[in-house]
Amino acid sequence: MLATAQAQAAICKYIDPDGNVVYSNVAPAKGLRKLSCDIVEEAPRGVGGGTRSTPTPEGFPRVSPEVQKSRDDTRRKILDDELANEEKLLTAARAEYGNGAPQPLPDEKNDAEKYRQRIAKLRQAVTVHERNIDALRKEIATTR
Picture 1 (cartoon, one colour):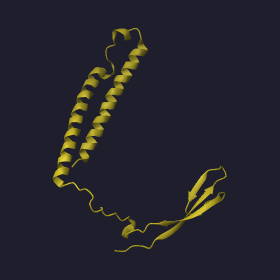
Picture 2 (cartoon, rainbow, N blue to C red):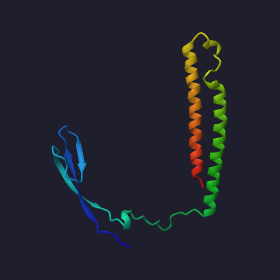
Picture 3 (spheres, rainbow, N blue to C red):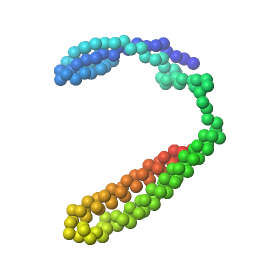
Picture 4 (cartoon, helix red, strand yellow):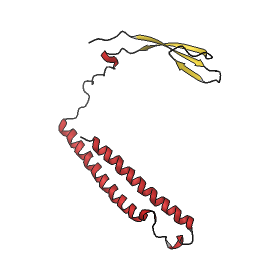
């Protein structure tokens, strides 16, 4: 296993002509005035430039595979139930929306703006349920 020695880098604070503060570890373009410079020690990197993981401390609670599987199954069931509920709500919202042309309510017959507002709310409800369904399907796809 190869590890590099700790490296040091200078992180400098500059100010540009407009008064904006700029931080950089490389020489800046002309026109910036140096305010300060600090030496920062970088953490050592392992082979391939990746970071080393910290081992799990002793006594850290662990979950048995059976318990985790039970939790995953419960999570999957909850997500499936939420998906089924959202699909029902979407069906109802689409029916109420009526492809963008629901029948006007009695008080909307003489008030076109009120009718347009109701259509916009119905359209928004359909969109929200469609997005919820997409999000739930993505989440279900990530379950084990």
